[in-house]
Image (cartoon, protein in one colour):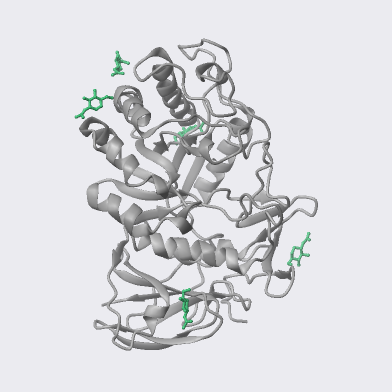
Length: 456
Ligand SMILES: *[C@@H]1O[C@H](CO)[C@@H](O)[C@H](O)[C@H]1NC(C)=O
Ligand SMILES: *[C@@H]1O[C@H](CO)[C@@H](O)[C@H](O)[C@H]1NC(C)=O
Ligand SMILES: *[C@@H]1O[C@H](CO)[C@@H](O)[C@H](O)[C@H]1NC(C)=O
Ligand SMILES: *[C@@H]1O[C@H](CO)[C@@H](O)[C@H](O)[C@H]1NC(C)=O
Ligand SMILES: CC(=O)N[C@H]1CO[C@H](CO)[C@@H](O)[C@@H]1O
């Protein structure tokens, strides 16, 4: 058994050749022990592969200590009222013309489901959770089309009663969650303000142009947040990187807006047609004091078949390929879309079924941890908040330059190197750290590895 006595191994199930998930039920789930730094001068390696390894530790041995389930994923995005992945459309105040938000109420979904889950996750997590909220739609009566669905904008213009009310709605949301001890690190100004250009017309959304978002931030949302009791940061865009750097230039080019805004949220859906240097890197160069954060990604979107593809290694590789690429282009974090979905890839009231790292089969009371889960774990488990990316110098023989990689220095002084090889053959390479020495190693075909060592 390659695992240590404290950790529980994956219980594999195959959905075709190489398509493997790890099965969990009410009493059993594979776990990893907390990361223990290896003795000076040694390293540990964690490896997952298409051939069947899942975060397998290969050097040294685990210490006996409290088992922490999961992968220490600690950045969570919470929809404010409904998203398409709800079972129904709703807002927190469906009483028309309630400009004072007297009828603002959290929904049953918040009180009975999201909040209890957040409280349990928070209690179990060794690291503090960073939550951020994103609205999909305003109440129908605030929208130009009178419907929570479809291509409406907010009625009126920045500074008027609709925009003030919509900004106060954010504060009410933060107030109500705070009553349950759930506090938010940030909010985004709007999920996919330009989504209506790309998605079916029944999606819940509000359209904003960059200019409208700038004016809403300057006149309404920025002052409302700054004036509230919450220390909640503000993230703009929350949409595809094809809109960068234009969106940032329009919003952050306004000095008042730039002061209210902490960072820029990016979704991954059009990444394959937009190179990272002319979107992410160009934005970082213009606005180096505003962070870039990946705020949504998923596989299986807009497909006619295989919204959910159980055990698909390729979808895991697409996650780690994205994470590696964007971390190397000034992005400071990466968030998945749904933490868990059902066997169909829902629920979703506009039938926008997609894939997820965890798929729940409630008829059997089990859930499947897909390759995507482990690909995320190769980063989230080992790269805590406060880590900084460091440069890697490639050797002249340049074997490693065929691999994708990122290296970071953790706050505790340890180094982490993540190496991805998406090819079908093994790639031998070496790692030289002048402070410690040299490692000769191999990136197996279709594998991801995390190396961890300390320098002193
Ligand atoms: C849960 O999974 C474990 C490991 O696969 C198995 O031994 C056990 O019987 C399962 N329990 C139930 C209730 O299915
Ligand atoms: C919130 O936390 C405080 C202090 O820890 C505690 O007294 C209170 O009961 C908690 N409230 C809720 C609703 O959980
Ligand atoms: C920022 O935008 C607002 C409009 O929302 C405008 O009134 C203001 O002059 C702009 N400020 C700067 C510094 O460009
Ligand atoms: C800030 O809050 C105070 C008291 O709640 C209120 O009187 C004031 O109008 C608010 N200012 C802004 C800019 O929202
Ligand atoms: C030697 C080799 O084939 N390496 C592959 C590893 O993965 C990268 C990223 O996909 C490929 O570009 C390399 O060809």
